[in-house]
Image 1 (cartoon, rainbow, N blue to C red):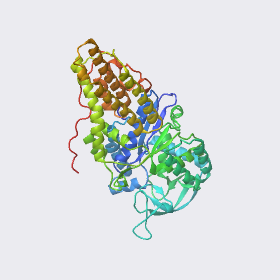
Image 2 (cartoon, rainbow, N blue to C red):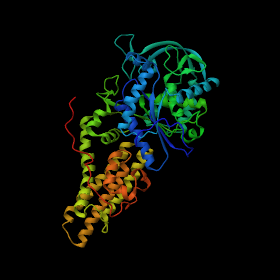
Image 3 (spheres, rainbow, N blue to C red):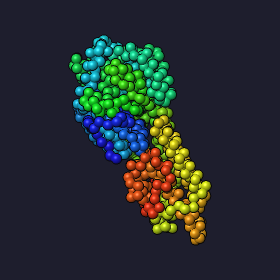
Length: 539
């Protein structure tokens, strides 16, 4: 499914499963960290589509702020020209390359966003939630965030202080600003967290936010007056909106806030905000407080993923540790890329990328366990039955174990991926089933059974191969959200496209219904799903 964008209207429907990624800052090209969150959201939304649910998946780009302005100036172009170039030449093409099936792509420079943002903050101003004041303190341009003195790291001199994320000197700002009365919402936020214990996940992220809010919140500066690349405040155009206050509203402006009430009712509140842990406070403290002030429902969940690490440092361009996803997809392939990061790194924890680990998992889990199973089954159906899937007429305890294993895998994967966002656990459940089928095939030894030409022997051979093919049918459905191109190849090779219809139309609820793949389906041995890897490219 190709990525799409800018869906500003849709027919009124029942509430949808609405998932958002952070909107990414376009000061540079995307790296593995950006792709990690986006792939996770894609797998989550594809899984819910496979459940038969209505789904809406939003991603996009954050294009205002001082860092964008400085980057554009350094490259001799206007901020808008810089954003247009990066979005069209880097961000959108990468999501298409990684097979991201987003339903919308929002840019914060779009009129559909900026008009609604101005209406939102004007409403808060009219309600007395915003007042004028002054600010003096440390600011990280990389984070586009005011820092608390206690968060800073020592620099090269006694007076120099560093951002704990970017390890670069912060700047001291003194300017007249407008403030949002964030301090008034501490108690309400804590009450919401208590009443909704799953609102912030994982538990480590929830605990961090609780500690922060319990220390008493300070009012939030929401404007800047020392540069002009941003959304002007409607009541005072000498000020532009603080980039984060502007950016957070993308989740409602894309959903139809202020422009399409029926669509907004269908999509909001969001089911899941996926965020990096470094922007957790914005999404779990500032954003809910703003929504409370505006009288709007809060998102159902804010789920923070960990950082991808290289050499003990967070992966980022500013730390010179950013790796382009295409560096890996050109070697391992897109589906293996999608598989590896969600399989190897438990979502919500930090994890280190390792070329060696990726290679080992590709060879062992994808090529040997999964790809080789598909090849062996197709080859034997071709050899013994000329590609026509035989009927199972001699099933016994061994086959029942496969049936039971499938039911267990479906139940566990659906719970872990669809509800808990435990991608690694859900994928592991599917691959435990694939290992079970490999073990079944090795124990039953159909290549030996084939030598028994008696009716009993031939019935047994047919049953073994049908059981293996039917297990692969189910595996294709379960792996479709994770590895759509590979699952589609397998689906077609099993003859399931002709007999059962499109893979995307199969549901999680029926995947464990044994015997769906009909006898007589045409099984073909297509291309190897996971070819042998070439040598690692030189640096």
